[in-house]
Image (cartoon, rainbow, N blue to C red):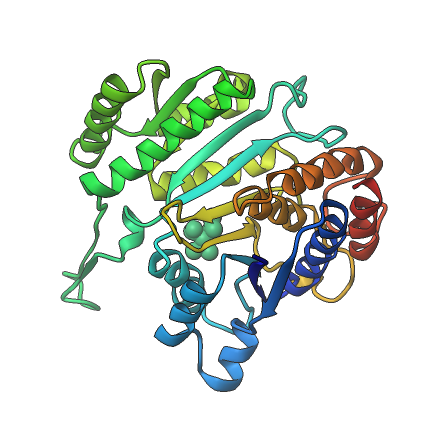
Amino acid sequence: MALKIAVLPGDGTGPEVTREALKVIKAVAELEKFEYTTEEFDFGGDRYLATGHIIDDADIANLKNNYDAILLGAVGHPDVTPGILEKGLLLRLRFALDQYINLRPVKLYPGVETPLKDKGPEDINFDVIRENTEDLYCGAGGFLRKGTPQEVATQEMIATRFGVERCLRYAFDFCRNKKKTGDGKGLLTLVHKTNVLTFAADLWFRAFNEIGEADYPDIKRDYNHIDAACMWFVKNPEFYDTIVVPNMFGDIITDLGAMIQGGMGIAAGGNINPDEGGTSMYEPIGGSAPKYTDQNVINPMAAIGAAAMLLQNSGQQAAGDRIEAAIKKSTPQMKSMSAGRMGYSTTEAGDLVVSEL
Ligand code: IPM
Ligand code: MN
């Protein structure tokens, strides 16, 4: 059966990088001989400004029932108030499709410059598994006496045993699988803030140890406070194998992760619903970079990496691996991962990966 991909190019430079990702999927499908279809959707800032429509229940049901995976370009439009599209489109999709895992590999590819002195591809190679449907992202909270000098605002950190446990199990399994394939040392690090967040972190910490002890005795458990993890990302990134982290802290440390792997131009991620029949969504983790729109200068590698992850997680492992290998051969030929300084245009960078397939 053909793989059905929904394509959401989105805003800003999203369409440009998505085009290159699709070019690479087309080429690898010919080489690896698999069938797929794509359908494009124009959800995003322009459509919202023109029609007021962001995405509704029928759109969600369509994506859920009729597609195996989603390839997303970027969300965020300079003329739309910040928050509207982020919440109304990106977070809405993650929540409605129950994409409870946000998998963000932090991998320094060959030839890519890292701001970390004396660190190379063998030092920066780990995976962050960010819980993607709970925590401060639930939108729980509110105002009291808004606009008065006595105003109160709350924003609640939600951790449910169910949500935490399914994320932890995915992380343990992921870490175990990496150990099996020789890609990891079987070390899972929980990142939280147990010394201050004594309720939410306590639930995570107990679940982590209970599940690990009962079902994953072969996986070594480790714990870092979030602030310490930021320090180690810079000082000793080679220590990490797999990290599991709640949503908000995961958001923050994966931007740091993206920087040490060479920047937003190369960092890809997957919003994954690992359950039977789940629809997952893959994206470059950077934003829509409006100032570079339509100049053919943005780096498409992150979007191409997202395409590789999509295939790897949608029954086309060999094709996904083949794209990843081609990225590894392409990056040493590029001058930089930054927009406008690659030594290649956006379309040429896509062609480069195709030629290395
Ligand atoms: C990300 C982004 C989003 C997040 C925003 C745009 C809502 O920063 O994908 O990391 O916070 O998750
Ligand atoms: Mn982010």
